Amino acid sequence: MEGSNQFLGTERIGRLMQKYAIPCIISLLVGALYNIVDQIFIANASYLGSYGNAANTVVFPLTVVALAIAVMIGDGCCAFVSISLGQDEVRKAKQSVGNAVEVCLVSSIVLTAVYLLFADTILAMFGGTVNAETYRHSQKYFFYITLGVPFYMFGQAMNPIIRADGSPRFAMISTLAGAVLNIILDPIFVFGLRWGMMGAAVATVIGQVATAILAVWYLLHMRIIKPAAGDFALRGKVCSRMLTLGITSFLSQISLVAAMAAINNMIRKYGALDAVFGQEQYAQIPMAVVGIVMKFFQIVISIVVGMAAGCIPIVGFNMGARKSARVKELFTKLLAAEAGVGAVALVLVESFPHQLIALFGAANESVYYTDFAVRSFRIYLCMIILACVNKACFIFLQSMGKAGESTALSMVREVVFGVGFALLLPHFFGLDGVLYSMPLSDILTFLIAAYLIVKTYRSLEESSTRQRDY
Image (cartoon, rainbow, N blue to C red; front, side, top):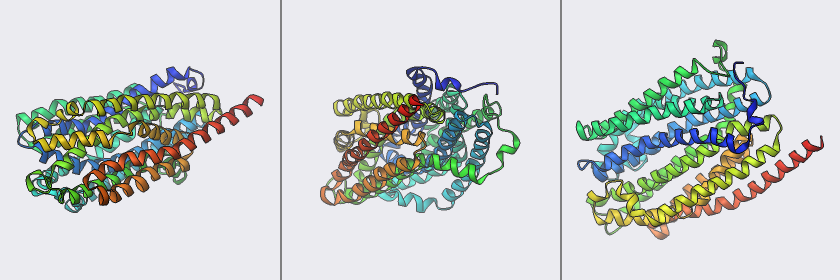
């Protein structure tokens, strides 16, 4: 091999976290900004406004489905590669990369076909029928976004694989290049050419194509793993192990889609019963606003997931090399950092909600828009510190190879609590019940996560003691 990952077992933990986590954070932040930038430009285009904003909220969960599949493949491959390299099994690492590429290509084409064939039904499932204008914008935006799904999925799947190959900086640059293109093209297409929802979508797809092209180039010039032609042949055992390691990433994203579908439909149902939002001209406001709050949450979670996912190669290598003390030290520093991010986010949402909503065209909207947005920020995200710690716990357990515990915790949070409370609480509290579902879910999840964190610490301490005695 031309390169080596042995430094993952010797270099200071703090320095490794900076080297791997920062590029990963930037990569995920940039990825999240694709949709958020679209929404900012859409919201500030007077001819689109809250209708376009609501349409963006409708389509957003459907892009998350594509992301869920991509990160399952990419994060699973990243964990597989890191553990294999820690065990000095380079051949398995190469086969994992080859199989990841094949699975990603096939799944992205299948998903694109499904979206194109059942577009109207899918949009209706996610609340697109709140009113006619929102539905029209949703159809146009969704069609063009769907055309970019294969490029989007390939770029997202390759990103963690590139990090596992020891090139976190290139992974960051490839994603950043696409996002910069999107930011440049959005105002040209939306304001200059007045292409509306189509313009925002086309700008996004062009950026995704750029990222995919860079990912292909890197695949042909990998530093450490360098898969050969034979490594691209699908192998059942390799795919099974890879996808098992990545299943938590998939479930955390796909269950978020289920929660968003439940939330969107509850907003549509109970908004129609509200004295203000039951009026046709204001019907789209709750969906647009909750979508904006979710986008801010997505920014915070991108930082949180970036910190944790950036540590996957470090955790995987040290677990494979049986260096439990280093894994424990990393876990401690990661949890502290994640809680710090959550604390900063909490100050922002509780102290500056008016400034946050102003970014999304509040000046062009009614007072009902601003009032509901401020209430949404302050209630929906009031337990964001716990949400950050919970997410870090999911990913760390996954990177340790504890897919079962990680998956169970993720499913409880997103499906049992996330979907369950979103469906239940509006029956008692109306639209505000949708907002209460988030903090209640995070509190209950944290109680379970705290138990698993203590259990993990004890396990790592016992392993470290055995290794010292040996």
